[in-house]
Picture 1 (tube, rainbow, N blue to C red):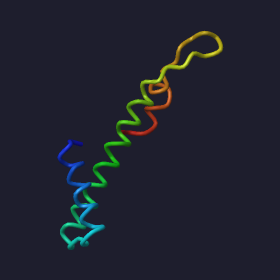
Picture 2: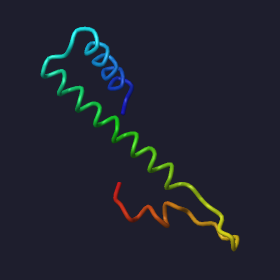
Picture 3: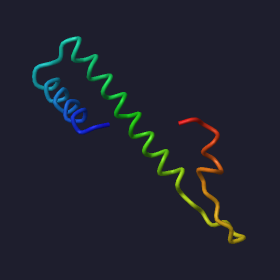
Picture 4: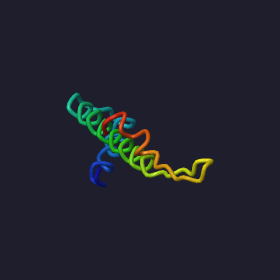
Amino acid sequence: MNQESIDRINELARKSKSQGLNAAEKEEQQKLRKEYIASICMNLRTQLDNIDMQETDGSIVNLGEKYGNKSKH
């Protein structure tokens, strides 16, 4: 998600609190919020997939390889 989209989300939130939004603006706000949440989820999933843990036997296991293949991104 780019900075322009985040700025637009914030602009619509401010307008919503002060004046209210028309139907088109509400729809745009919902669309942008869904994109933002999807972006955050993808970033979190990527970070979690890159975690390595050392097992008790000394071997190192990448959690993304162990658990990440169960659900598609």
